[in-house]
Image (tube, rainbow, N blue to C red; front, side):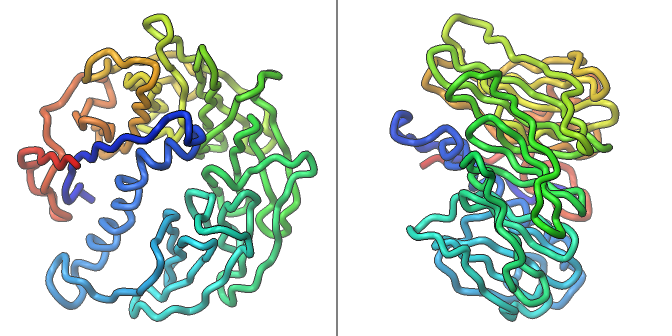
Length: 342
């Protein structure tokens, strides 16, 4: 699949008033939500109607949670703590359920599929039967951690969750029982984990530490046991620079590709965490108030970062030409980049 379009959105929020995980979500939500829609367009392009034509539409109060799909159904999380199962072919709503929490906003970022359930984070982690919508279990740690505030990942049998308290959890998808928990806080307050990703039996998760010296790391955990395989610390280039890691690693060959908050993109050896290459930031040196989360995607031999997108070779980190826009499923060459500012 080729990227159908690209653009940038600039908006300011008072940093002190928004929790770190929520700040990351506010800065990246638009780009993350665009991806499933593009996938659906490419996959259905041979069907009735022209490419890009609306096939069906389901009304709702904002689809705030990144969806997941199986062979027949798309599972969306919306505002007001809802999860909705929609038949892919027709747009028919199969079922609608709620986590039952009060308030307007669902707290998690995405849904995942594992075993026979679809799971969504909403302070805790909730699992619903994919066929019927019946609630199967709720995972709520005894220590009052909040594993439903961030991202979930799954290998089909186990669900992995981060937490703003600095721990990573592995949850049995069939029963909701805890398989393991690994504390990455190092005993430091204001430390959280974010956005686990999986590859070859390893969970890669970002670590962010708030405070005057806001630093971070990428940690590789054994998916079966939770044991730490390696840790790569991101060191700021200048005093008081932020270098937290928001996770969401991408992969290419033997490399794990991830961004530091200061805008640099790192390729690390998956086996050891050693640095293969570093791509420098493409903007002015950031101050402490800037969050440059830079969500990543890898296609072929190119890694693209979301902020001021400049494709880079996944082999060397060298910058490709400044273009990401207007390529189609068939693989046309990229056209000039478009920028949208608000």
